[in-house]
Length: 311
Ligand code: TUI
Image 1: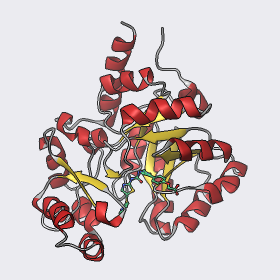
Image 2: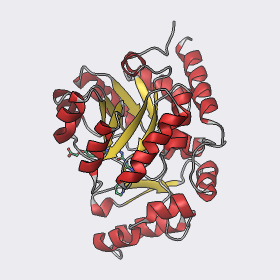
Image 3: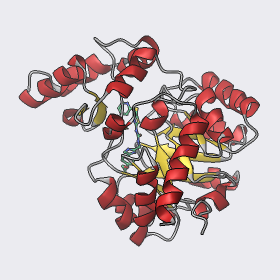
């Protein structure tokens, strides 16, 4: 039995049904190119990035790999309209979206032959995306890093699988072959992995960020931003704990929260600033203990998954 070939590997022409999450400020061409070269789908983050930076990253990725790669469009990004046009102009093969409903862009993307795969936090949005012409959906549980929905991967994935006919990719809390095997058991045809790739050699985050992830244990993630309606999962630091408790006891208002966290992701990724940075990570960070090349990460995860699934 081969467990590797799924609707997703067929749809996208990739070897392993694994996406590297399009992590804002983090997922750039070096990481995405390495994951695509390893046989997965590398994804460049298109959220918060100026348009010239993104087109440069797309060109660089094409230099690193001749394999398929994707761009993630963070729909809360002020320049989402521009990014949506850029992916068409640059002939990007796959677009994933997050933090909103990409309905208004779907017709143009489909006309350009782009495979469109939105992140959905609910069955309702998954159904809407299928009706709008999505090629697959990524059902992302609250275990994920960054901006999260409420439902867990274990509960969300099988419900989305039951509700739609297009392939479902599981995301949130997957960092080894057991997570892949479990996702397949829930009916997913692929996985999206973010936190494990934070500890890829090719991941360009500040060394302080990488060390926080590698050193994290099971209880070291915390959700901030619930008071603003945009909850985000982070590594527990003095800064993130202060934000979470301030929101909870009302000493930090939602407006103050927005002000304090403005630019905090950049401060984490580029400066490793522990006082003012938001080090986004998933709840699985406790299981990420070693920095390795992306290729080794992908191959190890699938060797373990295959062994489990063939039992
Ligand atoms: O988007 C993510 N993760 C992210 S985006 C990000 S940058 C950011 N910075 C500050 C505040 C917020 C974000 C960091 N991490 N993951 C995909 C994801 N999409 N999670 C949740 C959703 C989502 C939520 C609501 C998708 C669709 C949605 O639809 C609402 C609607 O319009 O129906």
